[in-house]
Amino acid sequence: MTKALVAEAEQAAAPTSAATLAGVTLRPGRPEDAAPCGRICYSAFKTLSEYHRFPPDFPSPETATQLLSWLLAHPKFYSVVAEVDGKVVGSNFLDERGTIAGVGPITIDPSTQNQSIGRQLMLNVLDRAGKLNSPGVRLVQATYHSRSLCLYSKLGFVVQELLATMQGQALGFRIPGHKVRKATKGDLEACNRLCLQVHGHERGEELIDGISQGSATVVEHEERITGYATSIGFFGHAVGQTNEDLKALIGAAKQFAGPGFLLPTRNSELFRWCLEHGLRVVQPMTLMNLGLYNEPRGIFLPSVLF
Ligand SMILES: CC(C)(COP(=O)(O)OP(=O)(O)OC[C@H]1O[C@@H](n2cnc3c(N)ncnc32)[C@H](O)[C@@H]1OP(=O)(O)O)[C@@H](O)C(=O)NCCC(=O)NCCS
Image 1 (cartoon, rainbow, N blue to C red):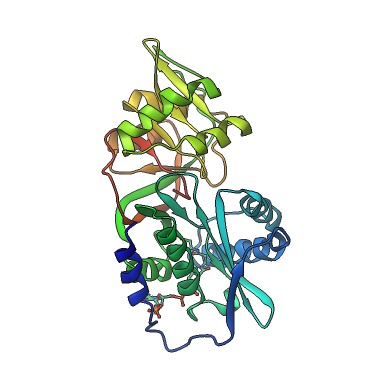
Image 2: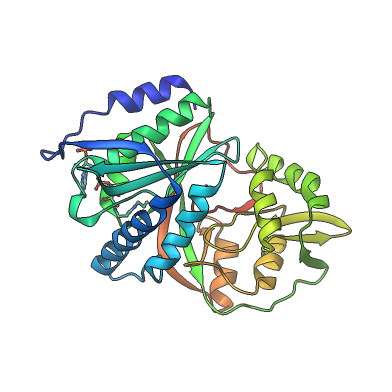
C-alpha cells in the first residue's frame, strides 16, 4: 500500500457520526489481553449474529480467547488494543506474514460500538501497514453488517469478491487422477510458485504455519503439485490451477475448520459442485482491499484474515 493511500484514509479520519467517545487510548496488545479481548471478540460477533439470526462465528468465549492468544504471541501479527479509563474496549490485528497485509479480527465491546473506536483501530493498523510499505491490505467483511461495510468503504477499501462461508459434513470425495496428501516443508517452493501464478505474490509463511499445525495439504496431478491448502477452513487459504484441484482438496478435508471455508461465489462451477455435494451456505462475506490487488489468475479460496 502506498503512503498516499494511508494519507487518503487518514484524511477520511474525521468521523461523521455525532457520538465520538472521549478518553480512548490505543496501545500495543500484550499476552494478558487475550482473555478480555477474547470475551469482547466473542460477544461482539455473537450480538451481531444473533441480531441478524446468523450462527455465531465463535462457539464460546474460550475459542475466541484461544485464537487471540495465538495472534498476540505470533511475531508476524501486529496488535492494537483500545482502552477507556484503563478498561479494554476493543482490539485489532494486522497479519504481516505476506506481501499483502491482512486486517482483523477487529472487535469493539457492544456497549461502546458506533462511537469511532473501530475507526481509530482501523487507522492504527493502516498506519502500521504504511510504515511497513505493504503494497496492499485485505480483509474479509461480514456482508450483512452495514456498519463495518460503511466504515471500511469510507476508509478507502474496495469490494473485490463476494464470498460464501461453506459448512457441512466432510465429503470424503476423491477426484480421479488428483492425489491429496499432507504438505511438507519440501513442498514450499512448488506451492509458492503456484501462489505467485494465481495471486502475484507468495504466502509461504502462512503455509509454514499450516504445515506445523498439521492442517496443510497439497494435491498432485500428473506427478506435479497443482494446488495446496493451508487448511480448508475460515483461517486457511487455498490455490489451484483448476477447479478439479480445489474439488480434490475440499473433497479430502476431514472437516471445515471454524465457521466454514470461504468460497468466491463468482466461481459458479465450484460453488454449485459444493452445493450438489450437500454443503450449505452459512453466511455471505465480502473480500475487500486497499492498495494493490491482483485479479486472481487461477482458482482460490481466501482466508478470513487475508
Ligand atoms: C465493526 C466494528 C468493528 C466497527 O467499530 P465501531 O466503533 O462500532 O464503528 P465506528 O463508530 O468507528 O464507525 C462506524 C462508521 O460507520 C457508519 N455507519 C454505521 N452504520 C451505517 C449505515 N447503516 N449507513 C451508513 N453509515 C453507517 C457510522 O456513521 C461511522 O461512520 P463515521 O466513522 O464516518 O462516523 C464494531 O461495530 C464491531 O465490533 N462489530 C461487531 C464485530 C464485527 O463486525 N467486526 C468486523 C468484522 S468484518
